[in-house]
Image 1 (cartoon, helix red, strand yellow):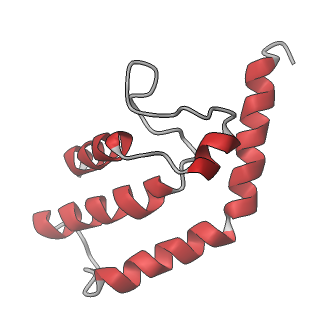
Image 2 (tube, rainbow, N blue to C red):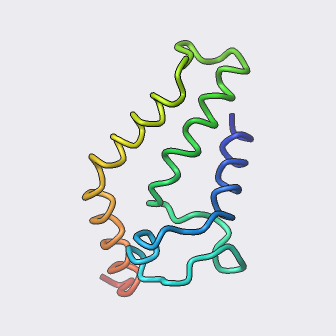
Length: 105
């Protein structure tokens, strides 16, 4: 499951970063390279890409107690969770930026 999570995170780092995510962190040029090898912690795409990869790995290894039959439905469920927590994610990203600018605060 750890390998599945790492593989999903690595694949996500190579994908184009949505504009809203770049603006939330104050960077317009977030793209894979020396300065961006891992997605930002509050990247909403982590929930919808890493979580299903971990669930699939758990199901394949026999660890999952409640296997998921419909991954499309599960994906929509994760997106609903993500939308419900959107304001929290924006707040946390803004707080992160203000702390990064003033580390002695």
